[in-house]
Image (tube, rainbow, N blue to C red; front, side, top):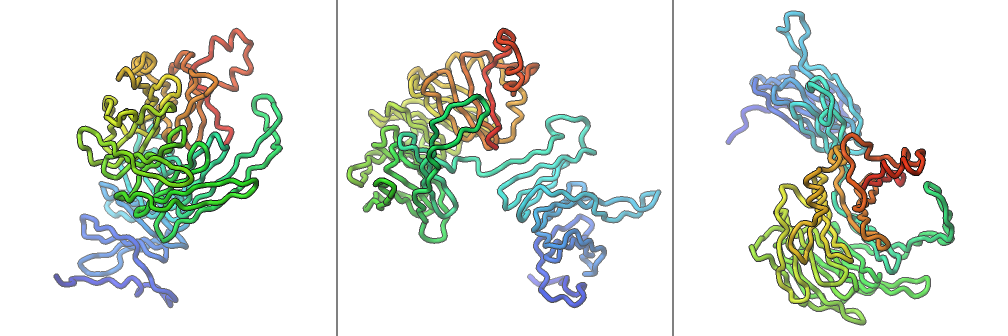
Amino acid sequence: GQTVQRIMVNHHVEKAKRECVVWAIALLSNGTVVSADSFGRVQFWDWAQGTLAESHTVSTSAALSLAVSEKEDSIIVGTSTGATYQLQLLSVTLDGQEKRWVRTKPFQFHSHDVRAVAHSPTALISGGLDAQLVIRPLMEKLQKKGYDAALRKFTFPHRRLVSCARKARLLLFQFSQYLELWRLGSTEETGKDGEVLSLCRMPEHLVQLKSKGPEHIYCSCVSPCGTWVGYSTASRFQLYRVRCDGDGVSLRKVPKVPKLLPPAYQLQFSANSDSLFVASARGSVHVFQLLEPGGCKHLHTLRPPSGCSEAVYLLAPSADGHWLAAVSGDWAIHIYNLKCFKHHCMVPTYNCAVSALAIHPSTNNLVIAYSDQQLLEFCIPEKQYTSWSRAVQSRGLHRAWLERDSPITHITFNPKNPAHILLHDTYLLCVLDKSLPLPDDSTLLMNQSTLKQLPEMARKRQLHAFKICKKFQ
């Protein structure tokens, strides 16, 4: 091919001391080229003549991205300050024959570069380096107020970056290129609901483990006993033995770890810390036996009977070491029997992705949270949904619960009350009490503060299954 037109954007800058970089372009149906550049300008060019038709300086920083509406009468622009701007094609005369592009709406929803934007018929969508996806509705395009009219923010990633060694009271925090191991603080005080208790022992940073090379850490985990730490990048899987001697902590890399096809998409230790489950990118789960004083060997590879090649991204072992649930990229949930290393069953397929799952330690019921906020409970031994789960599907969950934007990322259980399911997302912690009735849409979902003000008899009448707390934000 050959160059048919060349436009020099720097020619229109007086005494430019730095080079102008064009970060984004769009081509309109009338032959107009739209450019966004490092000088914060959105410019409109006549493609045939190579001349500048309009120029708008939307920001003092770089304009990094742009998107055009389907009708080509609106443009969204993302900048390096985290701000997004809207330009609209508006009439400048009463008869509407002459139209010009006008910057109409600035929005500041991001803290870092807005590298990606999209324009739907009813909303402006932006994605920033702050790991947030923001949907800003265009109110003039909506017929009525409701779910679609709300500003919505989605924080990524939708997966756990913190793992807990419950027996050792340790937390492992995953960052892009290093891990941090902390010991939890403790208190000897008791108090009333809402009170902040002083600590007799402060949280303690024990060790930082850096990953070699430029690759980001994809997944990590600490064993329940706190003596094993594993992580995986795109090309390497590493396993370490942790030893706590008084106030000191030492890490020793486990030599000769069996080589597998990387990367590992999820790591999970068994409840007794004797085994490690490694989710592969090809639909299988590798089972490792952990050896004293610090070694491991490959025991078995669990594969779904369908031969699915989608990556496994979630794992949930049972507390008794009998079962393992694995979720693959095709949203299928496979249950494996770890006593004989065979496929046990598959949970009926649901039309949404699984965001979290866990197996109840006393009933071996699998609790599943989906990306559309639905909650289901599957009895593994009986290979069917439980009666509580059928009641949820029949009655439906509260509308306010279903309209949440942030998916559940972790599920666990109250060891002192088998009826309690603990769930959390980015913004809330929820205790789901299966012994209480499900709320309907006419009742208040977050009613904890209201219940405190009622007499005991009235409080009992208004109790429902969901107890939600957002105080930790």
